[in-house]
Length: 336
Image (cartoon, rainbow, N blue to C red; front, top):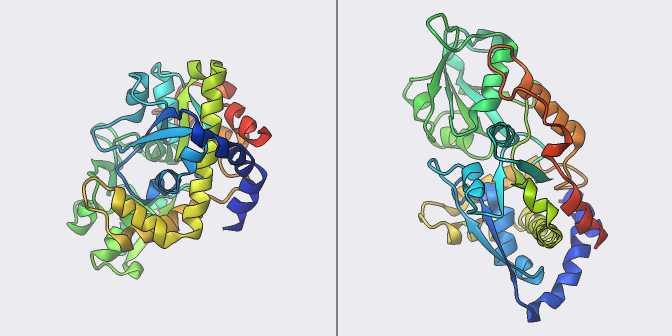
């Protein structure tokens, strides 16, 4: 994956070279809270740990899986993690509620979120959504969808709602069982669950948020603002980001090994090699920047614009500005 290799050669590799000497020293503890369960979506972190990249960077990293009952912003606010992997809509919404989250690295620069519909539902464009039931996750992932509906001008609450919103579980059953015309899917996960269930791709209609102009930034690394005032924490964070990016590069170039790492690390035992390999292959396609991990301020502004849209139900009420992101750790990584 050349775009990742070029950027890491110029930045992360420099930071990690100095990490070789950390072996004889005490390792700094660092805890990462994931947004979801152990799966290929987070391959870079598990691979970095498995390959010893964190250890080389002087870190003892604990990776905590997420789940439907785990809200990463709440975990970090309670002191349960040094950093979290979160989507920007959920992070900015939590910030407005008082959790002072700051984006310090943006791993995915493209959105993998999509709405997948049955072709026989009669839906061929977003204008056809009224009168239909649309499945949406409500674990922070609903924010981009609600912004999209608000931008389209479709009401989705009350007796006069034009679109019926189904609080979708974390499976594809509502589509398979005819409970919804469309459901939320990720290109690296649920979409393929539908295919694996026996529905041909030609029987599906998909709407990528990227194509609809309502894409928001997804997997990024967030910390509490107060910790960025601590130089030692920023140094530790910088080494963590560098090692993680190295893990993502390795995963992209060694799909089989990365998939097996996820299978081995899954505490539930549910992960299968073929599914995880396919997931990782799709996930790395969302990392397209020539400077992986570097948050593009323009992309941040676009996400904020989407979240502020819709007079009836904006996700956030004001632009948090530059206070909501920092390049401090990334810049230190590049300078080391």
